[in-house]
Image (cartoon, rainbow, N blue to C red):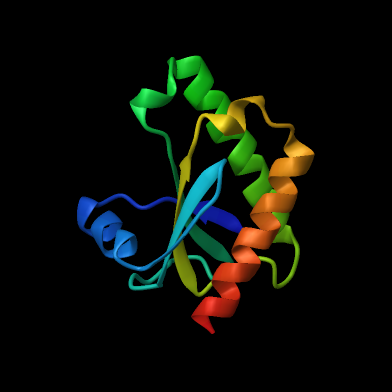
Length: 119
């Protein structure tokens, strides 16, 4: 299973936010070619971000858990997520009410669109 690694420095966030972007009703994904060396070979650079405007900490954490679980499932599928890129996923409030099955389908389509654009 690939290990998820989060971005730590604000400069790295700024670089990724200047890269490719894709917006849906449930989340926004930003992608940029990897610019940092990872210690682990089988790691995926992805950060999940929730704005405070979304609501209480309970709501933000639930959205984050949902999206992280879907990303972990996609990372297990070969070719679903390109490991040569760094991603930032911004959750939106509609993801709170939506069921995981629909979110999973939307995320698969989103990463496919990003992968086709980036190739």
